[in-house]
Amino acid sequence: MSIASDTKPKIEFVTPLMGFDQHTAFELEPLDDDGMFFTMRSTSDPDLALVLADPMPFYPDYDATIDGDTAKSLQIEDEKDGAILAIVNMAQGKDKATMNLFAPIVVNPKSHRAVQAMLYGEDHPLDAPLTPPAS
Image 1 (cartoon, rainbow, N blue to C red):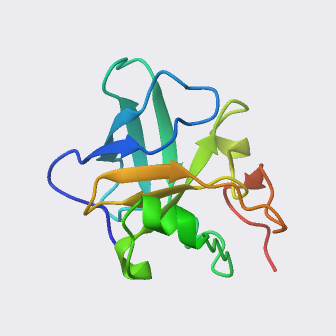
Image 2 (cartoon, rainbow, N blue to C red):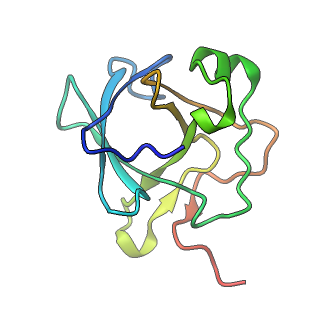
């Protein structure tokens, strides 16, 4: 499902993001026309913002299967109702940016709910290169 919109969709985390226990309400703002990159900014602290990216253009084989309890908490009844976004880490600069494929953000834009899902048992790195190596 696309989460691109003309407005800044507000989302509420069902459980707080790791390390950000006091921030559960955020706004998503597209950073590009393709709907690939977003800023997720806290509504209670505008200085707290994370860059998110749709992992599929970078990793087409990425399989972020969420469990039934997570889907239920987000009110996802059909997989088309949810969107998967990865947190982008640019601490080492744009050229060395990575994305967290182990703990993606799962969003249901219809219910305005989100959760950070941990994909235990999967072989997804915390720091996958933003631009995958050439095959």
